[in-house]
Length: 98
Figure 1 (spheres, rainbow, N blue to C red):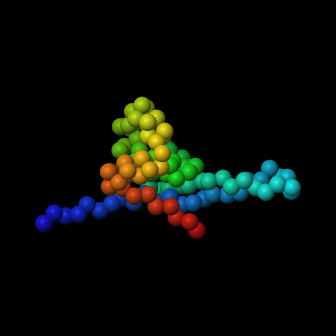
Figure 2 (figure 1 turned 120 degrees about the vertical axis):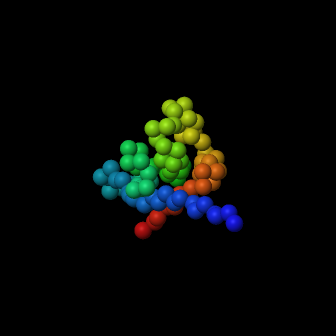
């Protein structure tokens, strides 16, 4: 009987915040920010869902092993394309909202 390979889950915490320029007449702008202890620490914070998938994929592939050309190609992909690559790599991205 073949064993099912478990999906690796890359968890990101939603650390988004409102940025205000100090003006009382304007609402603050919501700044998306996602952090993960599961991805390569050199990648920093992600700024949208696409970046979360990008970081998870790079970490799974090995950041040292991915060429600049491949990185750029991944960075230009849409969310649906990144989700398909993650699925092909048998990884999942989970965003934790507190």
